[in-house]
Amino acid sequence: MRRAAHQLYDAPPLILDDPIAVPILGPHAAEIERTPGRDPANKPRPFSIALRAFLVARSRYAEDLLAHAIGCGVTQYVLLGAGLDTFAHRNPYPSLRVFEVDHPATQQWKRDLLLATRLPAPANLTCVPVDFERQSLPAQLHAAGFDSTAPSFFAWLGVVPYLTREAFRATLAFIASQPPNTGLVFDYAQPREALSFREQLAFDSLASRVHLAGEAFQLFFTPAKVAAELAAFYDLEDLGSPELNQRYFANRTDNLRLMGAAGRLVSAWL
Ligand SMILES: C[S@@+](CC[C@H](N)C(=O)[O-])C[C@H]1O[C@@H](n2cnc3c(N)ncnc32)[C@H](O)[C@@H]1O
Image 1: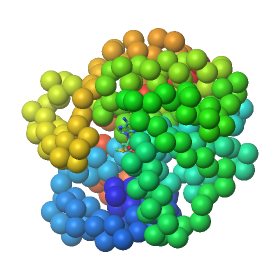
Image 2 (image 1 turned 120 degrees about the vertical axis):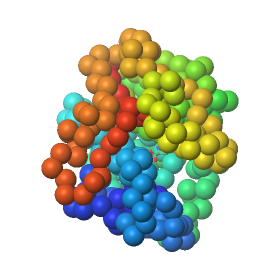
Image 3 (image 1 turned 60 degrees about the horizontal axis):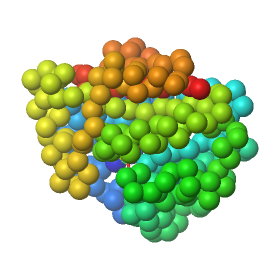
C-alpha cells in the first residue's frame, strides 16, 4: 500500500520507481486513498509519511545492493518474506533467478491477487512456501532448485521484527553457510526504550495495528546487538534515518523523509 502510495502521491524523482506497485493491489488499490497519511488532501501525518519513506528506501536500498551483488557474480536473489514485493515483475537481469520465500498463507494470498489482476507471471521466478517458525528454509529452498554452491543475495525486508530469536538465528546461520560474495540486507526495529517519547507513541500505534492483523512485533535489536549477530559477515553497513535521508532524500521538493530511530537497515557480506 505504501509503495503504491509513493507512486501516486510523492513528487518526482521517485525513490522506488515501481510501475507494478499499484496494479498488484488489484481491488485493494481503492484503499490507498482511505488510509491515513496516504492522501495528500488529508491532514499530513509526519510519522505516516516517514514510514512510507522508510518502506520505499528499504526496497530501493535492497535493489541497489542487488545490482552491486550481480556485478560480483551473484545469480540468485532470495526474497525472504516477499509479501507483495514486485521485483520479480520488474527484473531487468535476464540470468538472475528469483526465489520468493514466504509464509504459505501469504504466498497463496499473493497468488490469488495476481490471478485476479491478470498480471503476467514473471520469468525466472520460483515461489517457495516456508513458515520460518516451523519449517526448514534450506530444505524447502533446495527442493525448489536453489543452488547453495553459488553466491546469492538475500533480502529480508519487513520480516525480522515478527520472528522469534530462534527462527531469526536459524535463517541467519543458513545464510552464513553460503559461499563468499553472498550478501544480505534486512531491516530491524530498535527496542521501544531506545525511542523518544513522541516516537514511542507512533511505535505503539503501529505495533497495535500489526498485532491486530495477527503478526505482533517481538524481536528488537540495538545496532551493537545486530552487529554481534552478524559476526560471521563482513562489510557491515547499518543505516538509520540521518544516513538514509542523506543518501536518498536530500534536496527533495516534498516532505518525504525518514524520522526517528525506530527502523534501521543493515547489509552484510560473506
Ligand atoms: C510486512 S511484510 C513485508 C513484505 C515484503 N518483504 C515487503 O518488503 O513489503 C512481512 C512478511 O513477512 C512474512 N512472514 C512473517 N512471519 C513469517 C514466518 N514465520 N514465516 C514466513 N514468512 C513470514 C509475511 O508472510 C509477510 O510476507
